[in-house]
Length: 300
Length: 266
Image 1 (cartoon, each protein chain N blue to C red):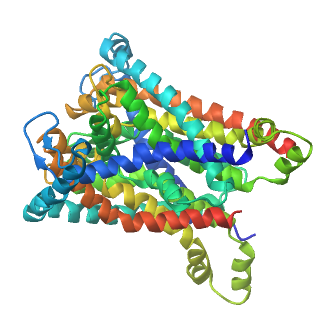
Image 2: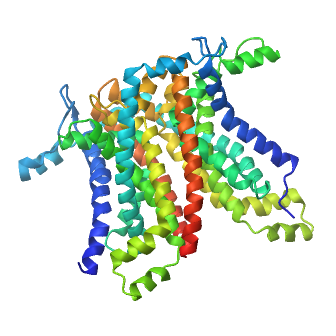
Image 3: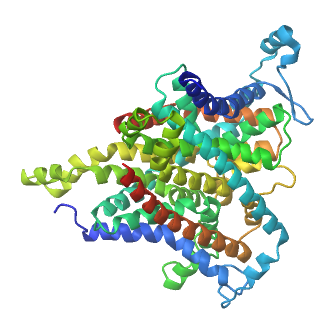
């Protein structure tokens, strides 16, 4: 085997796999989103089939219609789902940052010997099933659940709080599930920080609090940005959390897509929903990819 | 010393870790509850564990899940390691940007989209849905995680070792198996474990791509949870959490040893 040939095989195997199982499926989704609904198996009328040759291609372009997308624009349900997904993801990302930053900061201030163990404790929940961690909250947040029992016993409240099946429960679920994604990148930037900068600032008369805001926070920004992307992007398309913790009035696009697909069996509309969701996320995903690549090049 | 554990930091740590662990601890405690009402304590009992062991459907689902996870993690590790080498070592080739985009995008792609698009692919090529389709789907998204984990190890290690081996007459394959692989081994192992748990956990992608006879544990748990909280699910969760905890701790101890050996090689 000569060198060039081996290199070509090395590149081709993962490349072709991703091309076939990642890129081609998207082209199919795009195609189906432009076709008509049919009551059959599969429940859509194909817009394009290769076997028809050139006339097939002509039919493809004449048969293209944006009916499903027009439908998405027409029906308030979809627009509201998109907007409310973005809003819920934004609020939860912010809340995750509020909870995650002090935690990451505290970890870098803990004694050196604790740190590997603390890091392990952050990573451990990430390995345990997502579904189970969301499930654990149902027993806590239910009207007759543990949180209400505890608060009633304390006498803080007289009537149980209604948290389950509201957006509040969804926020709690997202913050809880995605906390490690926020803490880890912030921790790694804070840990790499050069402490002499802080010492110099304090020597020069800067107060500890303003040194924190003017040195620590700006230096931690790459970690904060990475953490926010890692929480925001998957949260927008989240299905399990709004489905199990949210109520019927909680609109999130992942849930709408799921229902469109599994309950209404409307595949073309489900595909159109997926395409629009992807378009919403393209910009954040590209920014995130740039960040990852830059980091890889930086550490070289 | 500027890094000190002030009361503020200690509070942040206590609050953060309580928030992370209290729900899991409560879940475990209530798996030993005698009462069928999950949130009312009725005395200590292990009867739900017995009940679980007699639940044939649950055990079948566990067996399916385990097989899917082992197969998909193994293929994903091979493909992901190759992808990492391509990203870090192969230099420039046509459409490299497309390649790195395809490696990074699945990491942040909403699962509903990945699941739906793969299902439509399997229908388009006429592949019946079942265990095979779940394995293919899991392999695809897990290989990207493996690629990221392995490539972060590849960028940090000293390439002159490989050059030295080549200068001393080792063939490229020999160099890979006797120099490169031992050094990146901890990352490869971590990648496999990550791929394995991702597969074990996945509900959304598996739901889209499942077929008759291929019900995985998360699908089973999800349909049970939709009907309400049940002590049997608490018991199952406790078992899964224990397995993962033991696994992760063992793996990290093992990895420490591998890393130490890796450094000796370097």
